[in-house]
Image (cartoon, rainbow, N blue to C red; front, side):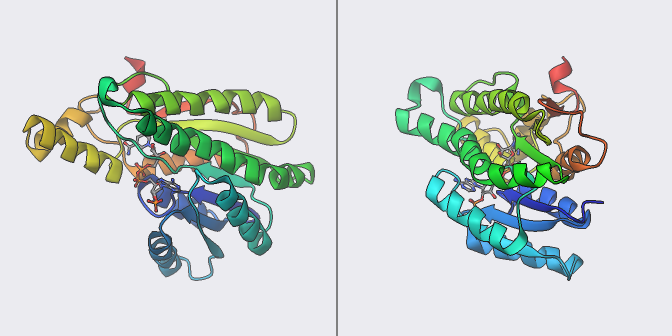
Length: 263
Ligand code: NAP
């Protein structure tokens, strides 16, 4: 289905990014797996190769907040696998802190990783993506934002601000690239069963004395389906937006949240 495509996924060593990498590999993409931890990326590449022994996969250890590292990693990936046709900006961090206790460094860290990291990665892949689009291979930029990009949550103001920024960037860039063969969309998951949520559960347990089960239920309660979203469900939406026939979907922020934002 996506046999001629090169997909670069940031934060590909765990959680949602790992599920997206698997889905795109199964659809036939060549993959570049990016993230800070070489060990996590290596383990993910091995898991993928167990299922898909012929998979072309490049590891790109990099911190998305460092533009030089991002540009160098993208250049190396392109030298091995050609221009990037699908960029999934998934790397992210979510630190919770009451606003009054949030210092400027913590604020900046959330903006750097979630928003500016997305900017650096798009800047690095876009020239090659546009060139490929001119010769007929469509480009896809998928920004993994969050329901926190579309509504507020208490005690994560910096994360919410950063993810709203990701949604804004998505809309503006979608308009700018609309006639150039590249679509830009944001995926906005609700609470999803990954390390980020496991950390949130530990925080709730530590700060409120709730049991782990009660803490998980408190997070799941925001979802009208009363459950956590699964990484595979987020990955399916990425696959759909990359598939043939999705060219008219542009500048959208699509919630994968069991209906949370409908209420
Ligand atoms: P996760 O398992 O913690 O994944 C985050 C990934 O980002 C990790 O693989 C991490 O790898 C990478 N990363 C973090 N900082 C980075 C940096 N500075 N440079 C490069 N890579 C970095 O959590 P996840 O839930 O799958 O999160 C994936 C995305 O989904 C995030 O953008 C998150 O905000 C978003 N999201 C999650 C939820 C949820 O409830 N889980 C809901 C909505 C949105 P390294 O540590 O190796 O760098």
